[in-house]
Length: 494
Image (cartoon, rainbow, N blue to C red; front, side, top):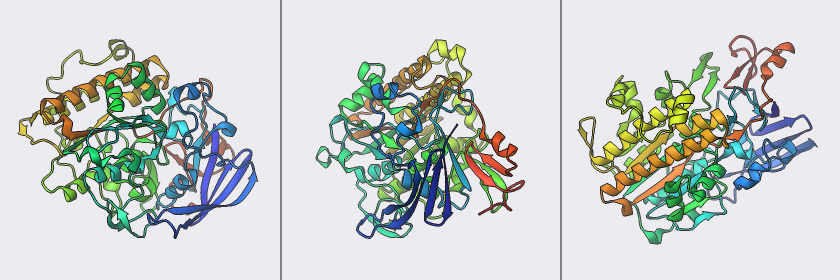
């Protein structure tokens, strides 16, 4: 079940242990780097170094992943592991121990899983096409999830400015008030222009290898169109740790790691108030942005600063602060039922077999049908009786991919159905932009919040049983954040 355990013995020092070895490392500022990045130094190794391989290109493309399902720790890669582990422990509510599960582990009945440090669970797709984007097709490259927001802002004309950089100190190379990411300059080609509009489509939980293969084999022709007319990074965008939804949705919108923007996980424990924080549930996720730290700026807020009077739109996306239209704001006002009025039955662009067989697929399809209707209505100029100008920035999150990839794993029939349906919805969104006559002035980004890995059929279990049997008082938040101590953790170690 357990791949490795990470902890921070003291500020700026970290230790990672596996069953066959351990590594200690330290974080120090790099005075030679004008971006203000940190430098990491290994201080001790015992046995096998569990973080020795940190190659972001590992287990890519799809044929390589399929030949190495559920890789053992000796054959796995943990890209950018030092940076991703260290940032986690900068958060005041960081756990005492971060337990990272193996590629094979099934903490639930799901055949697809994410949340850990390894490359398949970390790798999200990244495709961009339109004005300002190089037309290179599928290229041998990678980036980080935190690089997406500064790249979009640079594309829209934002110049480097003074703010807070990766070290937490003042930095003159940022596009957001607080920024860990960098502009992905190989993605950009200023000679192709500056877009008037940017549309981001997030396909939650989409395995990058699977999605790129589907774009090539015709399962996802609209994604294929984006790849052909732009650039796709073959080794994807590496998600922040933990590789889960709310943490990385927020990283995409802020350019910051979870330990720096504040939304640490889908759930964690707040020692200061001695209570649990849950950000991903039907009752709470519309309120998740309340946990953003002071000084954090969202991409919506940055676009407004860059282009006063711009309309920004956030559809089915919890990280919505600063947007002019937001699905989550309708939820906060108790008006979300309006989005379901007149929804056709059966749903269009929804696979009939899996609509009948999977409740998760059915719910995700309903949510995504609503997302598409919101997006096309706003781009059509009239939504829920309100007139809208053309949006400068639009974010649309689709969720059925995450539901299907969890249900059957990324290589399953249900996953393929979800990709096909979501691609058709993407095509409808592109058509809505085209109807307004601005397709040649609009840049599209396709992203995900994390990857998804096929678990082993017979590898269930819960390490909490072993901890309890050993008499270790603890609480486990979101399956892997271990807080030591008695009931609550206020009395536990800092």
